[in-house]
Image 1: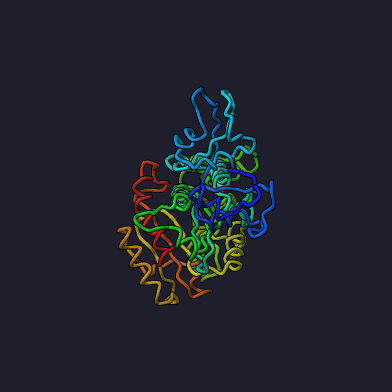
Image 2: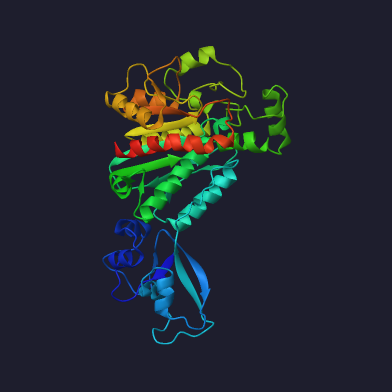
Length: 396
């Protein structure tokens, strides 16, 4: 929601009028000098939208403010030409509306376009969000990278490395939305007030690592005949791509990282297909390259990769994980009911590479139970199980 500076205004005053944390207003207006605001500068107030209202007979500024439970000055800030003395019947006003509802609807087939639309809507309401795309997919889709928070502890979540595990994207996006709601409404999630988490943590989320693959699973192959025919051939002649894990090149993105990649390749398919083909070399695919470059640049303290299924949390790699990893995973297990598993005969994954090269905590969280792709009917249960993990990753 946009307002305009008046002489004597300050961000601190706006935080009192709209009951929004000062830091969130500051972070929503990084282009402005908070110590030298100039009249008529536009200021973004996070957590609000506007609603049109036509003045009715008997209305007063006070009665309208009472009706929307806001100070009268909120109306003057949003309607600079409003007279404090005369309120004409039929006058069109803008009223501030505090956002208390989710933008993200996770209980649907959640493809790339849906995610992009949700991100745009969230950015409009919560302008303290950074969206710095990490790169492009094979088919030139921008891969969003969302960041919020001012803290020194850099935490990373990602989802949909595997195409048929796309339900992980709306799960992560719903948490992101709930986190934003709690911040702007001075609220808590499961009894944990989130503004301290925002001030202590810098959270980075890549909600859909494999957008081409997700769209392939949900919407079918692209119209381009050469790509379409190649995909059907790799898929054993079938046009049913519901079991497809790989990217659009038939490369499994979570077998692409230089962490014993050769050992993983030995036992896996040597040609493109729906799953497990790790490419001809590590980091050959634009999506995995983007993830690697992001991780190197941001120097995360911990990373959590969300997959399906199994209700397990993998937390080790060849004994290279630091001691605090076990403390973290035990808390994740306590709040989710998932089983912590230190290691399995698996290599070349994103969290494997992170543990190997940084010697910091990395986790692969396998959400839900069943056969991939998990049905959207499981969304609510999966989200409730994952919610404690999201929160613990930020506050511990």
